[in-house]
Image (cartoon, rainbow, N blue to C red; front, side, top):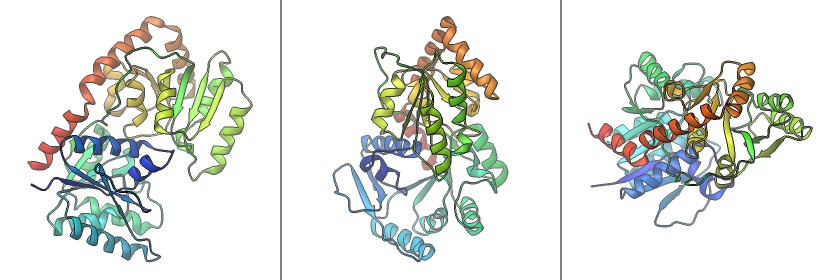
Length: 354
């Protein structure tokens, strides 16, 4: 039986060959490791000449000024040459359209992994370029047979807007949880891309109001360069907040393990990878988003609606030791049960084989 999965994404390229990674690249790395553990061959895309090994095969695609045409040519050539059993795409992209069409033509299973809560909200999908790009992506969703969503909001929008059912899976995690408590040198840590909708300024303001607490910001610059530079300048004026900028997955993990709380201040999210990064070390979260009410229902942290509540929640959790300790125990129980990579792999296999 053909057991080849093609991850139509460049995120693994970044994970292995660049210092900066994001949530998508981490999740695809975990999924690729899980497929390999189950004796699948994993293929992924790259933009450069990469050494091949026995773990992941990278496919270099030709770049051309004829972008739209070359997308179809690339998809056709790759599928015809390697004929994988399964193709996985994560997140909204115009290239989803030719993959949806040609994978059906070649009788290849195609699974779309939702990344953001706006992936299925018409008009709000985060896709660059002109309106045609968004239109092609929307048309592709009508042709995709299998969907994996992260939460009930995504599941509901996918059904209501596109009439599609899905498999709802939380993000997976393969990094071992810590067995001993790390020295806590950071009270509140924030890990995200620096975009205005992530509202990093809440952390800066909290640092100003709480000079006795220690804060840290980690993330790469997005297209909003001025915002990134403004947050960096604001942090430099304060002595209790560290602006790290982009860090590798390993360095970020180390700093998260040394923190008491993880902050999420985004306007919206899918299922933040940073939640799992924190929960792996039994660290509660203070968050503006709660995927499928997991945090509230399982006592994994505190949900806040605005900046004032955010500040109050930080102080409350750091001051009330019994409440903090109870949440840590709940996190440990929840994490071990729900985010097993192998368990979710089996669910995915059963889903696409029905």
